[in-house]
Length: 358
Image 1 (tube, helix red, strand yellow):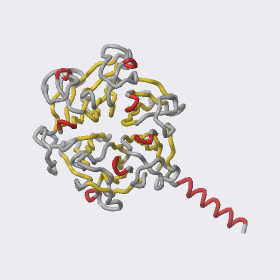
Image 2: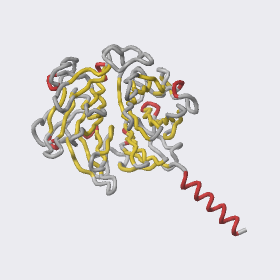
Image 3: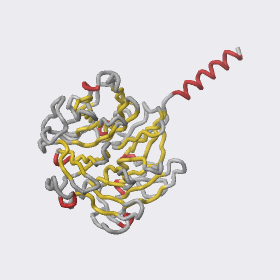
Image 4: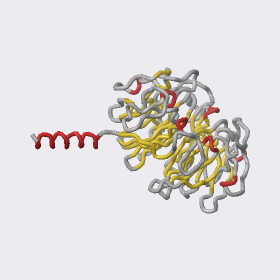
């Protein structure tokens, strides 16, 4: 009897150890600016130093989080929403709605600032901030010329392509712009500026429409995954052919499709209007994690089978409880980052960064 009881206990322990879980990595649930508080966190990236850098949107700051010690360091932003400080220390500059960020091949940090309509750059050796693209005024101009004289409209996302250029989701212009860091030149990489459906198998070019390009993530093989906000769908841009292939979303608003082909899934269940699409993504081997912001959920697409499932969130807005991902309510999450077997999620309006362990 004792051996049977012991066996049962060991089986239960093993099952628990293998089960997925979610916990708060940083944040108290109350917005603030302390070593333990964040305020509406958005995009994240791992820096060359192995630390997490993230956009602390309502604090109008960029912060560095040591993943081992959880120590916070201020990288940019004085806490005052605005557009000021170029040529001086990044920590004394004003930012406005920083959404996502990326490091270039030299190790300098670029920030997509939605409300300033610019891309800012921080020289990580000197700490000096400057504008890399945009004039501060919304519009569309400047292709083929110097990026600081060009106009963007609400840039949301920025990634580094395999050739070292930076791709920008210029969402208000329904385009992806390409910035050459070495020359400072900008151009349209994809999108016509029209809010039209993206044809299957079309090339990523200035002749192919993109309906609200919101966020991108690049895979090790060079494939780029693109989420369309107004288009409410996810596309894969082949790293070699540069052709667009739809992998998820019917284009309709909703929260359904789990267990089936992602092409039949709907995103943005609780949203109203046309801005319901996915707003963040993360890539792991043969897996794409999609932040279904207005469904308050994280969806997973198996890239081998194209089956979609919800791995975190209930579909209802809330804050926890934690441990069991299927019972943990989220509050408009925006960012996702997969690093060393952990999926980090910025649970934006819960003012937390959560850690999901598959």
